[in-house]
Image (cartoon, rainbow, N blue to C red; front, side):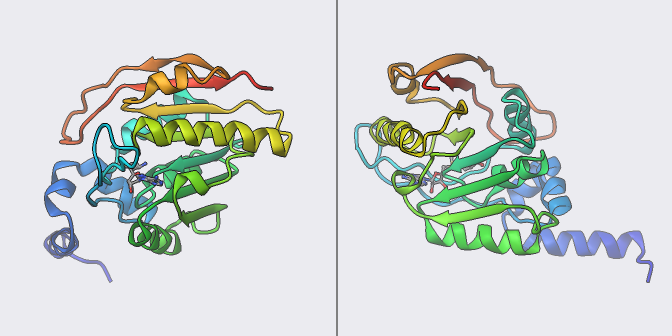
Length: 229
Ligand SMILES: C[S@@+](CC[C@H](N)C(=O)[O-])C[C@H]1O[C@@H](n2cnc3c(N)ncnc32)[C@H](O)[C@@H]1O
């Protein structure tokens, strides 16, 4: 049955009223992407700790889809890639990377309720038949051996970042992986850790870009490629 524009408007408003109304109205392109993909990735979850703490875990807030796609495209993500988002929250980057055609995408987050919602997103998504996996776990416990593209949006402080990168190198060695690992680090607060890791080569960066009709925050993104193959 055809619905009138005013009925459609009421349905849209009812949907928006449900959650995160302000962000969804002020970031309309992201709202449209969520609707197209059949997911709900707007939200906020508080972080814990702070600069100087080993356990500095950042809050959940999604990047804008425009920025996520720009990072994935700059990183050349495509059908040969296994992408991992460490600190995936509700899964926006995971769905975007799968939409761009990555062979497999994994999302990892410390907060079980975020991962439960990410899994519910997958169940309702138009991408539900793609190879997408969510894990409720600390990034430190996630095997990164076969990941070819690692996405980080400032999820934790420099100490955990250093430990995660050491583990990534060990995972790659023990799995005998010969493919390079590319890394994109949005808001790269701990970039010196990657610059000093000794097995990663800086591969340029992307400045933050203003986005019209969006209240989303934008950050610089830095890129690296492994030299251990
Ligand atoms: C800034 S949000 C990034 C959200 C998403 N990647 C994006 O770009 O839209 C950071 C996320 O990292 C998660 N996080 C923080 N510390 C973590 C850890 N040690 N292991 C896994 N996830 C972690 C937080 O729960 C939060 O959801």
